[in-house]
Image (cartoon, rainbow, N blue to C red; front, side, top):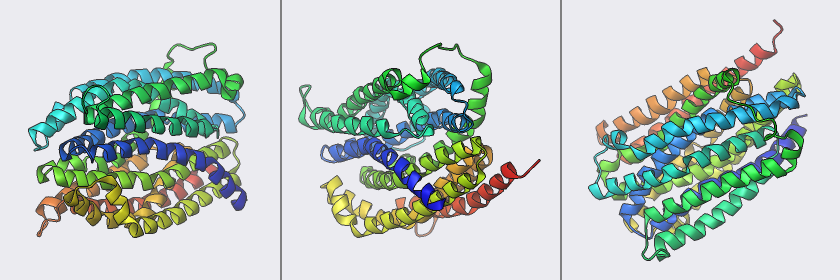
Amino acid sequence: MFVAAARGLIAHAFPILVAQLASIGMMVVDTAVLGHVSSLDLAAVAIGGGIHVSVVFALVGILQAVAPVVAHLHGAKRDDEVAGVLQQAFWLALLLSVPGVLFLTHPGALLGMADMDAAVDAKVRQYLGLLAWSLPAALGYRTFYAFCNALGKPRVLMGVGLCSLALHALLAWGLALQGWLGEPLGVVGCALSNIVIGWLACFSGAAYLAFGPLGRRYRPFSNWQAPRWPMWRELLRLGLPMGLSNLVEITSFTLISLFVASLGATVVAGHRIIANVSALTYMLPLSLAIATMAAVGQAVGGRDWPKAHAAIRAGLLLAAALSTLAGLMLWLAAEPLITAYTNDPAVRAIALSLVIYVAIYQFFDALQTVAGHALRAYRVTFVPMLVQIFCFWGIGLLGGAWLCFRWQPALGVAGFWLANVLGLVLAAAMLLPLLRKAVKAVESPP
């Protein structure tokens, strides 16, 4: 059963991995393009991109509650209820867009915490203000994304992701660097490209739901329901802790840019490159974790405990082994990889000094990621949220700030990365026993 589970996870995870890499590849494109524009533009996308990704991931985390709910229904052979869940999630996505847009268009309270160059500050505000126009599309598409993954149908996501990446690379290069609108727009050009791609992806997902095989089977746009509080309450009960978990995990890396802004644009730019590399390597365990959540959720919904156990073991072993290999390859290929991002020797030196931390934590990051998603399949989200708040904000950000600025001698930006390594080790050590306890609690007779 373990071999069958491993094969099933690989088959499910591969299209997710391609889709995830394509998604994060859009950030890589922004970084690579702006690395050849100026360090100010690169610093602006480092800070602004970190804030934008944090907002999107927090709100998307809430909407990801669709996945365990739909997986349970599918596993229990209650497919007639699936369309209603998706419809309620779309209503919730519209509601969540309102505070998200307001935050992105009025980021002054957060940006005021950082001591950054006035030129960088202006570029960050402009970048975020433009990206606000793409937020409703991002939330709508990610709802569709969670729905497809829960049903084990990720291939369409791979296609949309690859097309989006190719088009974004062309638009960002032309708008930001080549001056297709009259002059090179820098960070503004990247933002405009993101808006176009976001809405195209959203409409593509809607078209697939309307006319593709999932649409013919589940008819998600038929008998459209008005907002229903009981389903919202269930989605929010699961999703709010998931959203906060996403927020604390992503901000433990992305908001480093904000906290080290006082160290200069070169440091921020070097950190941004490593944050991109870190995000790319994270896509491997994340893809396996998403596939594991779907497999475990369907097995739990059908009360097939041996299948759930096999999926958990396969997910943990595959993610740990493959992520460790990825860390080793990253360490060996660090110099040519960083050189591809920027031709600034100072930025390159900062980035190269941080690669070792990303290579080291791969094993532990894989374990805590899969364990956290398996817990979601058992509808356990609140305690994992507390664990991640402590590990990622308590150790990663607060501990990192202490190592960066107060430890003698001060470690600079490396202090944040060292603290995040320690936070990931502790998160894995806490979430694995919690998963074992959750499995026993659900499967034990009352």
